[in-house]
Image (tube, rainbow, N blue to C red; front, side):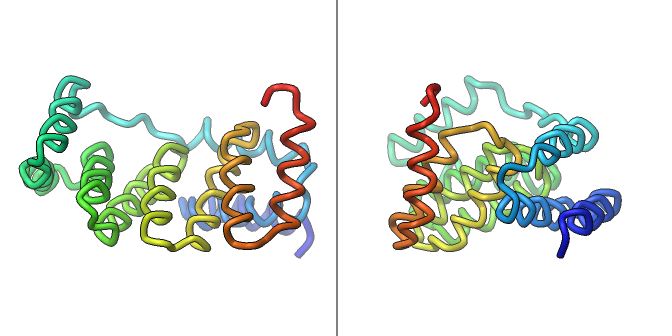
Length: 193
């Protein structure tokens, strides 16, 4: 598919609010044409147009309290509290994200992945949610899926070199040595690393 057709496809998907599919089209552009300057501008426009703010339903102190309970071995209390809150607030992205994190911390990577995927679907322009999902996928050894999610995170943040490093490192683990080497070479040429 030509680059113009990929942009047309992505634009149609964005107008239909099929954001993850649209980002997949952008990922395809980036992988085929990594030096394309138009992509960065298109992504910035889409983020500005479609990104919704995340409502802070829990204070930083409450979130810190959840992590303290987890450290004290009371993770089930945290999960129960968050689950009850989610029943009444099904669209609350922060709660869904926290549930993903605490299921991950409890070792239930399947449920952690489930909630992190929900978070990405509900807030597809938040890079942090993609990275949270990647952490859970890595721990459950779903490395190919993690790589795909990292590419989507990269699309949303083309200048973030830490994502490049994670992609290179994961490519090394997956024995995609030429891909990893290419990324590492680019990172070493960059003076801001």
